[in-house]
Image (cartoon, rainbow, N blue to C red; front, top):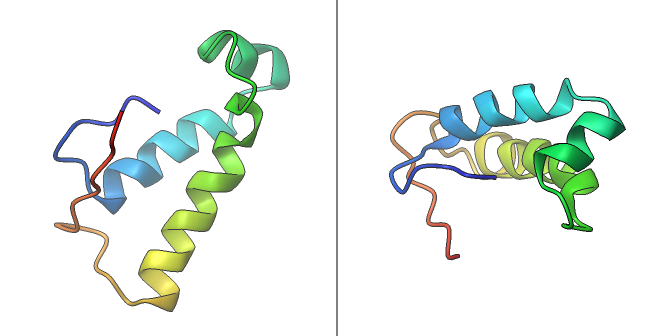
Length: 68
């Protein structure tokens, strides 16, 4: 999802808002050849809700470690 190395849950939420606003054609163009691109919206919203609402982590200052 091209998040910065120091991204937090707020950054993920901003990226999710942008991705979830795309239609299927735009989403496929966003990450061509990636068969998982169509699941980005669901996955991002799920992760945000799980970490912030279920586990109670703060939206700001909670670093996300993304291994590429």
